[in-house]
Length: 178
View 1 (cartoon, one colour):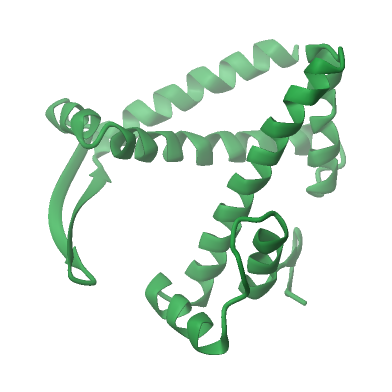
View 2: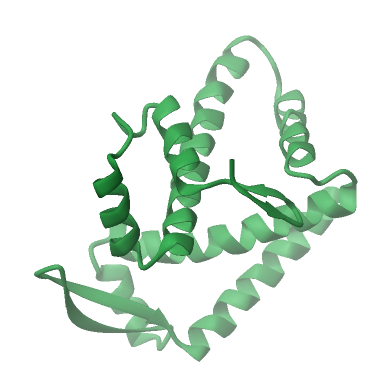
């Protein structure tokens, strides 16, 4: 089992891979040698755990989206469907509304960062070129495992813009929760 953590039990990477396997994301469990190599490529056990947890979070969110369709088809409206998410936050150790808001804000921050990264990847660099010309990103090329890659980093100006977007989203969330 994983390691104790103030928020609960932090799963071992192999446990996270097993959860991904049960969702059909991976075909089989890695061998001991594959585990060691994956951990090395990730940059260590902590980063491998984080990568596995991120994959699992995405896989679970896809499950939520897939389940939402049949719920809507069965005639359940937006409000009952939205309220089912309350159980998730309770399961995350967020027992009261203030704690649930904290979890939502943390997820919002994480998602905002991911949206910036995905936008750059999906548009094959066109959005990153725009964000670079606006001074929000900088990039450089590097070789990783024999492949050339463009690596992007957020600038101070980009961080300010991201923080402004987060504040606007937080204000919107507060309005909705009132």
